[in-house]
Amino acid sequence: MTEGSNSGSGTHSDTTLYDRYHKDIYLPTDVSVAAHQFLPPTMEPLRVSEHYKKLAEERHLPSEVYMPKYFTVIDVTMIRETMAVYRVLIRFHWNKGVDLAVVLEGDYEMVSAWWCRPHDKHETLDGDQYVQKT
Image (cartoon, rainbow, N blue to C red; front, side, top):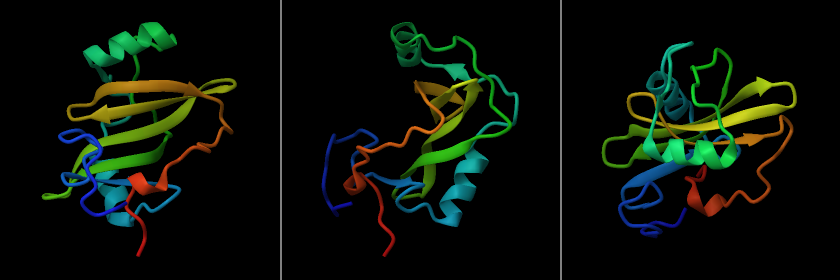
């Protein structure tokens, strides 16, 4: 991530306000622990944002999702000044042949989601958007 770059001022990609971590680039233990603490307990119903509702129709996403018991933390966005978790992307098995990736913000609210095959890899991952191990 380039210091001072500002792709989307005021958005979660604004590197002057947020630091992003990705499991395939660099996800320090303290950030992973904070992400897990940010997430709801197993089987807690996840709230649905207005944005998610629009995406759900377009992408044929489920209208109800409960926090899974087993998941992988993929991406964590932290508020730079306070190091508080702002959003977390998790991925989990949905049914035979498909996983669900879900972006959660405060109060267990789903703001985005998409389907992916269990063995899909994110080949277009832009490492410049994430904190690098130094």
